[in-house]
Amino acid sequence: MTDMNSKEIQAREKKDLSAAPEQTKPGLLFTPAVDIFENDQELTVVADLPGVKPQNLEIDLRKNTLSIIGDVETPEGPGETDHIREFRTGRFFRQFTLSEVIDQSKIEASLKNGVLRLKLPKLEKAVPRKIMVQAG
Amino acid sequence: MFPKTFIDFPEWNVGNPFLDFERMRRDMNRLAERFGKGLPSFSTAGVFPLTNVTEDGNNYYIRAELPGMKTEDIEISATNSNLSISGQRIIPREGDNVRYHRREREAGKFSRMISLPGSIDTDKVEASFMDGILTIVLPKSEPMKPKQIEVK
Image (tube, rainbow over all chains, first blue to last red):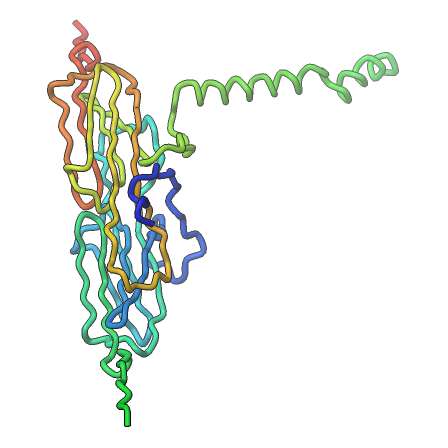
């Protein structure tokens, strides 16, 4: 795990989400790569959203469903013709169901260099507490 | 009537047995032409990062998706008609007592060489990094630029 950062990165094609639910806008849909991890206090979602500007990112929380929707503006200028095309751009979409231990009012999101970081704090009562056993 | 049918019959039914081959040959040529010219196709070179190369009248453009990278971790060098991009994508450790549910984002080193369709002015190459997308603008060298020719 420590030498994870020094291996060669393998090229992966962007995951195309073809069977998308409720597409409201024409265009391509991609699934962003995510890391999800948790500690005792919170759950963190880190998503790769290259090309998404903060104003084009929508994080929607409805009931227990968290949706990440990020639109990418076409980076090419109008007069450009293709030579090599290995990736296309469109909308990023991913949905998660949150468990009830998440405090939905305290969710924090930040987007930097195309990476979204979502902090989902757990409810107070869900944070495990160590109980000291008194001798005697 | 009979001789006519006799003559026509084989031609009409079997046709020219070489016609199918001819058609195949033409299809093959068309394919070869398409790939030979390097027209857009969605196959990739299989090297990270995935890269788009485009051009307009004055410049070539190279774009690559490198989310979460820092500009100081990207190294770009250009020669007359080649460009190399290398670097290291680092994903920091998230503390010791975390449990991972998903781990899809990749970290590691990369290096890629891209040959351009024509020569460039290496002194004027500019690179920018915005929202996780690297954009390199490579001005074409003077002889590569299209010239407007006036008809007298």
